Length: 602
Image (cartoon, rainbow, N blue to C red; front, side, top):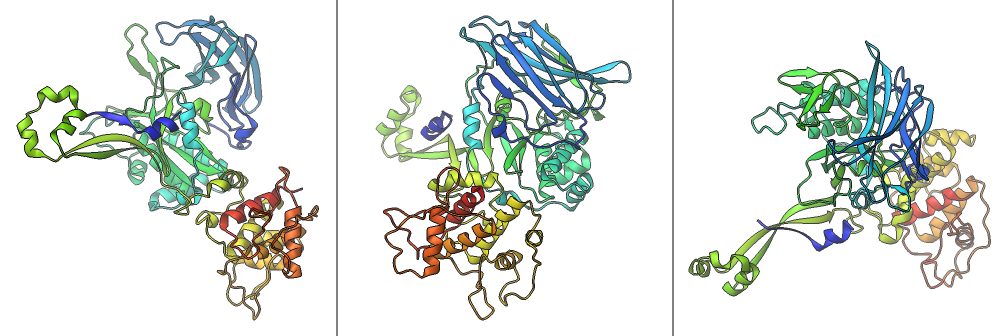
């Protein structure tokens, strides 16, 4: 059967670890470039590589008991039988402390790229144990004008999919088996930091689940992939590793997604073009913590294997250079660390994302109907001589199905799962800053309710002041959470906003939490929130449709239009044509943007 990619696709595809000091670096803190690459964003498990002239400078930090040295080596060539050693640097290292060094680059202009190998040593029962952090996953080329990192052909494709809007709130919950939830609690213990929780659960899965070589690729094998089965049997393949980790993470109230992808175990050609003609054969996990999606592949960080009915802890593969046959050497650490919070630049050499959350590439059948024999033969001219024409005439009209690779995104402003295009960039910023509570991650173009606005503003103040909840926020301001403030709601965010003087009731002991907010009401509430923050505005903007408004509305509009974020945008501006539209709807996405700008004000 013929296969083709849709035009849309073609356009869009243009270690045992201590957690005491671990934290997540923001990707923006370590931008990649042709001469710079950071392997991971975890601050106790990464290598940071920079090319200057003909030298590769490296720094980083590994946390492994007894860590004694780190080695960085470059090899010339794309396949094992072609490789010859280039240069190696070995530097002393201490667990949890920064190491650094440099190694010379020697590849010829226009020649084969240099593969980068990073390893480290720890004590073993006899002598030392040399372990690999990354091998054959990063490459450097000599363009004739200088050295630079080879960019994977998958990178822009992966960036496109990673850059699509994905509601964390939609990636919570599910039917999590009780045994899985109990195991999650046992692993996490008293830890409350979301990022450290991810690390604990990733390492537990990588260290305690075994890759089932007996069942992989065997239709008759007893293959377990459901989370409860994987937890019980302790053996599976990538789908089971990923599904179990997703449920373990979600059991802690942290959003997580199952991502399908194509994967290359060996990369013999770093320049290989993007190939989406075969379906994804691998799965990994992403989880939302500290305002971003953290990538982790527990399968590829697991050194355990189940083979011939036996469980083997740790180990590694070696390949015979003459025969190309891989053999397994048992022992060593059962947990790798390269694929926890890996950077997209590093991931993209081995992983081609297929489907991520609510968007990706899917195979669909498209049907074409041919009403005449001539139209059918014109569509398949190379096969015309093989057809029985009389039989074809009897079959008219002829329907032909074709498997087509298409891009789909199930999130849109129309279904409320994505902000409008004009609001998308600032909503991404607000999400990264933790300013969009789960309860607001829906119905973005719809009017916001009074209670939802209180949630947005109180959450912003909690983030800004480092308060754990509304009660702690009130304590920061010498207030205590009251009760019975309103007869129609006891929402703590509504109560906090009222006690802080940001919102008022509507009279008669009522708040009307589900009533929507007009833009002039929002302006007044944002002005009061700014007062809680100690902010003062500049000169407000004059609008053509605000004459005759009540004094409180005019004061609020002048305040929010004169208060600007660092990028120069007013906290709340007009709607076009010198109009403010004071009686217009104040939508969820407008609330997110204005609250985010208010948060950024100094």
